[in-house]
Length: 139
Image (cartoon, rainbow, N blue to C red; front, side):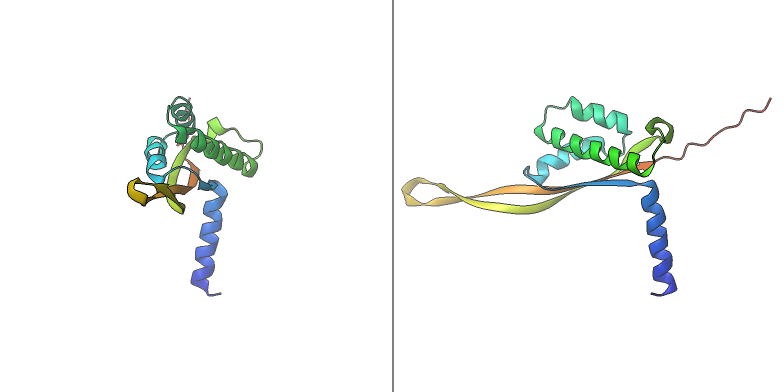
């Protein structure tokens, strides 16, 4: 491995030490519906994101809430003995990618059939902590 690749790999490793990641694959909700909910929490603090997901009436919010709770527990596993409130965690990125489509036939008039696509998606959620500038008081 060359020096440039090694430096890039080390930079990625250092970045993954501070961030935490959670994924949900093959979630049986259409990607468009899930993206509407993901846009609500992108860039928000973790506490605000959890509150907005809990009180949302959309079905996709429940699934996204579980992914967010998983990312929080992954962060706690990496940073044992540290409090979430002190690190100012926020939702850095949320991806909603299209997954497999189940193709079904629905009966139609005059002996025909219409195709139905049952869509699903992959969710990737990344948490990060904002650096809080510590001010020292001088007496």
